[in-house]
Length: 373
View 1: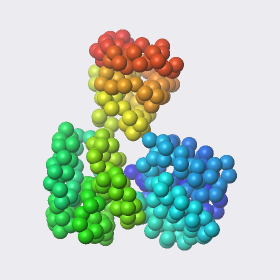
View 2: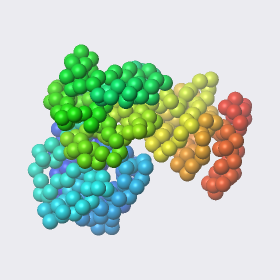
View 3: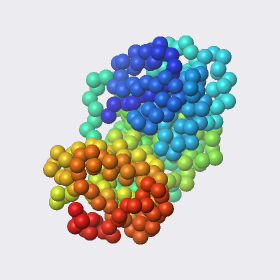
């Protein structure tokens, strides 16, 4: 999957420089010329990183960054700020909002590439892309932590998946493991003694074999300084303890380009069923939405014309789920597909409380929904 970079700058010259800088890499550059356009584009394309100018008309970079970090579906996107020399202090003031790094204008192309490569994995154009794995394929996760209880907790947290979770307690053991078997993802405790996490990161990134392996830092939420150092070094993302395993599973899936559509979309007997899980937070809704058009097109091409939206496991209906279902229904109508809803008693009751869903009719099972079409 090509790396997606969003550049938000009112200067056309700067946007051209950004495009030129990454010409030799497997990147897709999307542009916006102010914060309003930038937010809209971020929601549309879900970029891997945003290059954000501070001084812009309509909505400046500070306001866009604030709104970005307050949106659950966008806040995890790393941001590098672009600023004039005089604006350096402003960047430092807003660093607490969530800036990964900053670059002072004017800048050289190699500086921009170096800064971005510390945050995301830049792959040279034309380099063969690894085959995409599916949700039921095993992947190798390496956990580097000197606390056996944490390793065991992560193994238990992913026990419902076909993933192989391997645990080691030191830098040397991690290097030995990587020489024998290439992990798909590495989770490193940032609290390892003697700055071992940063040392291991640099060793892994300097090795051609492991250069592109996603590296996650694991940290207590309050350990802000060690998280900041890890972000500056270039860790793919930071995972907080106590671990939210739904969030971690989604982040690993995205980092290793895992096709997770099988968790939500099933096609059989002339129907496509879209199954929503118990926890339908913003990241899950976004994940399902990203697959929706592709899987619907696949269904149509397979001769399927009936869609079931199964919300029987959903614990609570929220506006994100309602928007997803509205989008799904519109897609069905646009393609002249028949559809039906299945939902539990809680979902049926809560749907009456929203103007957008008060008239929806839910069947009490998938079988009943299929029979209604």
